[in-house]
Length: 503
Ligand code: SF4
Ligand code: SF4
Image (cartoon, rainbow, N blue to C red; front, side, top):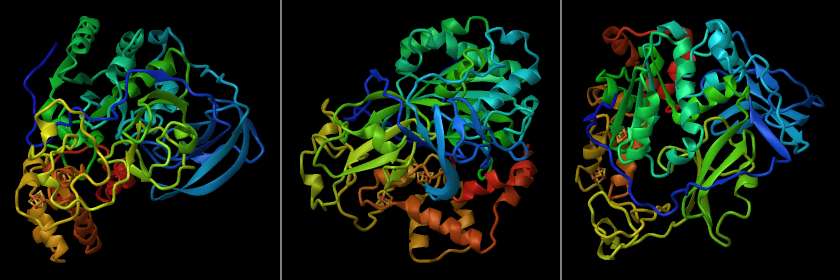
């Protein structure tokens, strides 16, 4: 059933940017070495189940911890364990397994998987998903009775699947659902429904993808699936935005979707569910987009998890150009300073932008045929020119001009410039709770639209950290207002939220 007219206040639609990935799919060679973090996606770090010198096969479990909330991690290549060592992975010191690969492409199928999954008891189906590692996907994970989430499958009331494409660069829905992809996606939903029978299924799709919406609607047949064509306004894909948009329910800021009995997954995650069960394929590779004007060509590529970034981008970027790499979105992703780091299960995109650190005085007086601007200052907003995002979109930092653009776009209804002024002047006390500083979801849109190049989100994060350091904990008031599930079971995941870590 197609349900229309759902939207949220604020947000911004990114249109027509250079560097958007084409629908072309390139399959790279198997890398000679992978570095596999033992914490990937939702849940805790797992314990290494292999040691240096062991031979491993692609698809073999190399990390598992049945005692904590987590999902197993697999070798993604055939080869030999070279080392197990701690490494810094985007602010976290975690164990990694380094594997020298023999570059053969085959993988060890997951024995319990079957195309006749409908004959499997629920427990067995949950085990297949858990052992395949796909239960770590999404910001809330996929619940099973194997401690892959803080709640049990029977507690899930809603499954929301996000195909809204509200980021600057997005995975191609056409590519994901091409060929057998659409049927596999629908069967993936059937599998999720089989383990979470109480849950209603909601699919949010970019409203401009009319033919895809029609095809999903036809394929959904007589299943009770709600399809929502939504404006691809950023940050529609955030749990805090998509849940209120679709279900009309207030989000308990500081907690997770699973605390509301909701799981939010993207389309690729649902396809991984299908692959794990029907194709017996553990989570060993991802489809990612190579996006941004720093690449010589923009397309999609299937990579083994653990592949180092320099292996993926080699010979694919503009020569003699200073570049900035970001894992995932230029707005919320992690800037990469060490290209030897690997991609993990959470990566959908490598964004490559051209560095531009020069100030640009009076940039508003230039025609700006490739510039994006919330205020529609530049010609690119009125003509079909492709826009460019670089690392210096608004020129030099200037004083706040109280234009309110940051307030207009804030999806959480905050006044970012007010919070910025308080924190910048070191006036951090509980008055900031009245301005709901803890409801910031770190989408960074306020900084993107700011014509003065101020980054209110950075100051807001500093303010939250100072308040937390002062012992101010807004969670208690949230807990009084909401009846939440799985709160005690996953203290760590909940506490990571306020530190801005929402991976
Ligand atoms: S912080 Fe930036 S966007 Fe917000 S009011 Fe000030 S100048 Fe405008
Ligand atoms: S204040 Fe927070 S939620 Fe609002 S736009 Fe800025 S980063 Fe996003």
